[in-house]
Length: 633
Image (cartoon, rainbow, N blue to C red; front, side, top):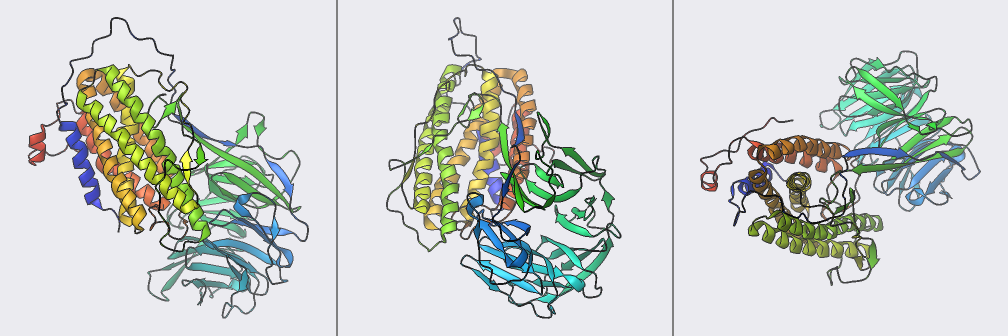
């Protein structure tokens, strides 16, 4: 069950109550101390973000035949296929490559992920192979006529397509049990496939045309539309950014795009004679991999595509020796490519984000979020929790990593609220705010224990936090404006989003332990968000119009940061049991984050930053005062 508008409305109501609730034992307007306490210097850091691309490295693949295509499985395993039925893999994208017996001597031409633990590979003479954790098995495609299959695409968990010579194009919506042939009106070779959605398939052809196959959802109800992309130029790859924005790469390395579902196409102006070989989604959004191994950032605009070379201090990033790229794939952490001489080109991708304003929440020191390392042992995890179902090993590992990340963040929040309590005392805040901060610290201790317990449960061993770094953690804290901006960004905006995300996770979870944990976390995070808004109301009363203006500027920046963070969550492949055990698909994270910003954060900001005083609590609760509206973005 999805969290609907009522979740947003309830949270909006709670946060607005924080704005209209009178502060307890309100202090007077702050006066400068006669002898300010001496604290270590703490230089402000401006918010910034970026991606660092590591130096390219070349390595040899095991000998035995040329490899022609790459893919990355849902569990992070790297796969490569090539001549003579050769299949290689390496677990979690590192370590040595291992030969996987495909059971066929025929050349394999393409491979893709079918589901979290399922891979599909196609090859000559109608070869279609399926991997499901233990080995490769052949799959029969009726009416294929033994034509060479050139490409394969999938939309997990059940939709797939294979294509090849003679216009062969076959679709399945049941994981390969049955197949439907489409696109039979022309005999032009289909060279590239991709799914924008389960009900739409893009098929690039050797004559430069694109076949768009769509369905209304009814069985066998497929319609076809042909469009000209690059007449006479074979399409080597097609990509879908969403249901309307498509991209195509020709065999010659030209890049084309459309913003209207394929009706009108524009060719990108590429200021280099280095052809494009692949487009890779990942940490940079969308990256073009060129024939030489050089990389370019792809910026999408309705007026056309702009490419910007990705450079290091020494210039454009490319291998020192001359190579030619065959194909490339990537993750937010890595870009890998095959070369014509059978080697592997790899470049690490390091995303970073400096949120600015040191000493703020989450627990930041010198502008960087600080987390404790993970240690084995008890003390922070709940005991006696066993798995209630037989989860695959890959699912347990993924769930352990996800809950461990949450556990470390909740543990750091204990320190964050402890420091916030000290800052409230330094600012002369009302006793009620100090008491709320102290209570929140206790909440975070419980959250950390619950999350470490769940991580330990899925990992099969007790996990706990190690020592939390503290050097420089208490610098600053006496500047009302600085603290208010920190609370706005990390509390009012960040915890409001966190509360709605936790509620969405709670509503989807069916596992009893995960559901019980999220029951507690969602309710507590909503109260923490309310506390942040209540502090900001008090801060504005103390700081006056100057502080209100600073917060208005900081609010737009904070919303932009959160919107960018939500849009950066890409992909939608999750392991078995993900939602049942309290986790969200990336698409759900994006949707909930945007809704929280639109339906909760902006109305609360409008109430906080309005020139007039907020409405009284009794009037709001009686329904006589409606929250002010704000522009929806």
